[in-house]
Structures are given as C-alpha cells and as structure tokens.
Length: 218
Image (cartoon, rainbow, N blue to C red):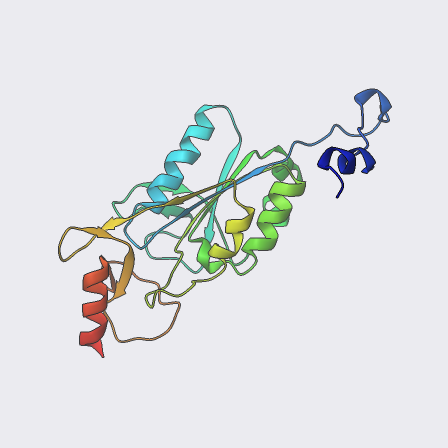
C-alpha cells in the first residue's frame, strides 16, 4: 500500500502562473466573487437583512445595485420595500440573465455587489449567480423564501446553497403564540404556488400552529 506522501509526490504539480509570465498587454486578472444567501419564512426580516448588508457595502465604497422580480408589485415597482415600509431603489426584472444588457455592460463592469430580493421568483438564479461570482468577480447577496406554504422547495433558492460562501437562516415570530416561526402559513384556500401577498394572505407560524392549521384547513 503506497504511503500518502509517495502518492502526492507522483502527482503532477499544478502549474503556477506568475505575473512576470503573463502578457503585459493582457487584461488584469479578475478576482473571484462571493455568494451569500439569506433565507427564512415570510416576515422574518430577510429584506431588512439584505438592505443592511447592501448599505454596509456602500459605506465601504463599493458600487452596488439592488434587483428584484418584476412580479413583486406589492409596495412599489422600482423599489425594494420591507414590511415595515423601508424603501431602497432597485431594478425590477423578469429574469436575471437580462440584467447585464439592461443595466449596461460598462456600468455592470464597475459593479462590485448585486443584491437580489425575492430570489425565489427568478428561474435563472443558479446560472446568473455562477456567472456573476465565478467569472465576473461580483459579490452576490441573495434573499428569498426557502420553502412555500406547503414547506416544499420554492423556486431555485435552495439550488444555490452549494454555491454559497455563507447561509443565513432567519426566523420570525409565530403570530399565534410568539414562539420562533420557521414556516409560512397561507390563510387562503388558493393552491397556486406563486401567490404574491402580504399579511392579508400569509402569517409566520411555529411548527405546532402550522400543523394544527393545516389539519383545520383540510
């Protein structure tokens, strides 16, 4: 049985590219980006946490932009809005892969950080995050629901967990008992997965009240 050191010695070394070996006319090496994911049920403060991080990046002199799905028109069309009314200007888009073209290639090159709110509505989230972080050197901060009202995977948010540098799971307060709420309960009998609404349609609940509520609804 070969000793591990013997195996390592027989492996081909990974070639190292020194700056002196590069073409002086070639563009500078682009640093790799990062992906940070914020998830949780409705009313957990995901958008608030996202905006807090975006504002922090801005105060550190980084160029930032906020993006949200054009499907979400609950509070404003061209702003990200928290449930308590805090607003921040954003680009509202039907998909993410069109962002670079619509924002402008020159402006995109100058961006350091891209915040994405309500990320569960973007079917191309995985592809966009891969390209933006791995190839374009952008820091991506994503906020979205990890589960729907049936506690099933909602959109592609969980798909990007393997890509992420960090995952933050937030909780809300159960509307019925004040315990930690991990789940979103739908108050209506509508069964569409995408049913955009606020406190009129949804409430955060603990496990006990989620299960009891589902039994009563059925």
